Image (cartoon, rainbow, N blue to C red; front, side):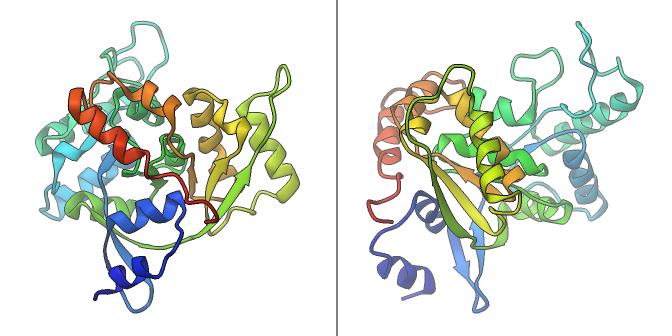
Length: 282
């Protein structure tokens, strides 16, 4: 029996985070480092550009380019009718990401194209991010994607190069923290207010070292856009990961998305996704 099997056998109840983490654990070292399989990678014009450049310089290629997606969102013009050329500083980064994505076979969502947008938004909107998946990006607010029940987190430059080259990543398993909000929101109160209240009560470092799961009737009543906001701000709590268990709201949002499963495959996916929420008592 390997360490992963032993770990799973002795875990009577597991959290949403545990289930996704364990399903992607390839091996665990004696000093508690886990090699995770990474299902999706998102690249933007800053960190993505740098990582692809580093790969070129080392003579490496992207291990699974079909699992990576890129878009320029940090240094592009916001002017109507914008193109990659409307902002001189951003134009260089735009051209670099576009060219390097093409060279590596990575799908690039260009300015003016359906699918282009803020990297943390285009993933969910296109169905790239799915419940139970692992996703990384060179951006701290990658935790946004946890709103769909994914294990999503930001990584550093060298980690991004490693992930692109191997489709894996070494990580130490964080502790888990559940935050429960109950009751209806009053008029004018938003998901952002929930996190700001939480930070005000616990402090901006309260989530450090934890993967946070948001739960409770208030969270269940939020639409996906509000859940994305809630998870996005996990990093402001100090947490690298923020997650919400998938439910009927999640499935309805994903059905029909460009890159989500369809037909009978969607039904099979939903059947699996229903097993992901944290076990009672976890």
